[in-house]
Image 1 (cartoon, rainbow, N blue to C red):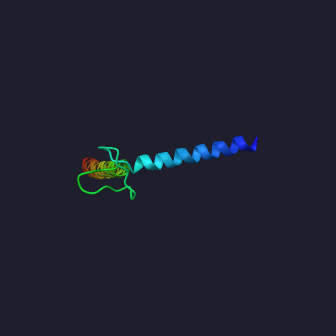
Image 2 (image 1 turned 180 degrees about the horizontal axis):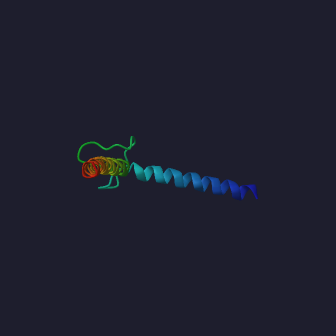
Image 3 (image 1 turned 45 degrees about the vertical axis):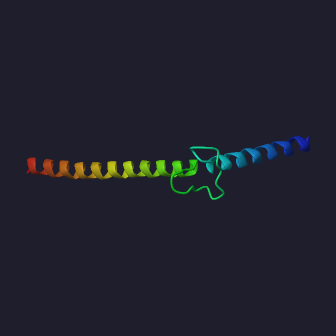
Length: 83
């Protein structure tokens, strides 16, 4: 039975290696970059993912600023109306 468990560990490790290799692959062709960061004119899946996370955080922070500004405006308006 230990041999079966060992085979599962090896296959899981292979899945991790394949996943890591995928992240370093170009989005345009089959080039795999050793540093996972492509030069100008190309982009790896890791760079694509980091770029998407950057946009997600940017949109979230802009939404937070808008909500805080609107909240402050509404508080000021409600205080002016009620004296």
